[in-house]
Picture: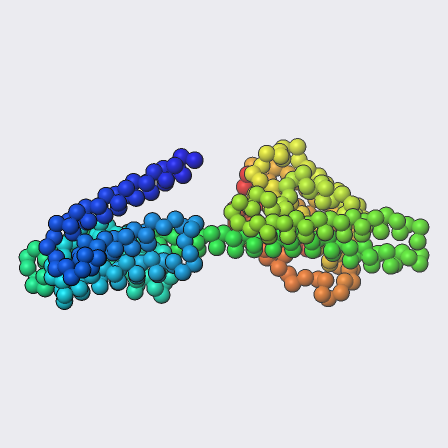
Length: 391
């Protein structure tokens, strides 16, 4: 609220200064000795019209501007009117006095042109406003006297300062836009990784358990119910994960980072629960020294390690009979290990084996946190995944 009121106060001050300067212009014009053909064609009315056009272009409320009143129109029309008055003073009317109101209006229009006009128009509109400002000293006096040259130098200085400030602010706006775009892109990539981690895990489980159900249909039909219940649970969780991911995608940005479907150490127990197929035994061993107040990003990465390892067990070693997940404190480091005794007896369709991007993304996630990831065969058979994180 304070920033809004301060902004409104600043706008009010600027509005008052412009009006005061415009009044000064009218007083100066009224005291000048310009040639008058008709009362309405006198320098007073002509310059007053230029000032009013400039004020309308600057102070027209943003919410009430018609579509045709674009930044290009706002910055070019008053400048053209000023240039026409300058040309008339040189060719027809004789000397015409200019005042601070017209100077402030043209400088303000120059600022708008450089900062807000489209890139293809910014240079042309800014140059037109600068030209209108720099030709004010020569109204009715084509000789380059010392006074005129001094005013031109001051004008050049003002043009440079205003254009430089507007250009700097425009570059800041561009950098801010790029930063927001990169943040959104990074969030979308992170959400894509989440989609892979969660949904691929559940869909792989559905596929493997469906194969088990088909094998049991003839030999042990009475034991099908737990397998079918596991398929139903995995399908429900996959749909819930996709629903959460789509919900986050509708609001992607820096504020969505805290709403991504990430896991934690407590979620590892839920992940293991119901994972085992008939004939499998899954064990979670958690060191009491491993607390729940670890940094959130470390907990999320540990969850991803376990999730990806279990997904790979189902893809490549569904014949494993024992899977052991371990969380322990190793001299101030969190160590996560997933070991199985599978022999690679899974027969999944080729399209279900994945492209090997899961472990690549997992290693990037772990190393980004200053950790290490090692995967490879165990000496006694099976596969081992180990990750270490700084706490």
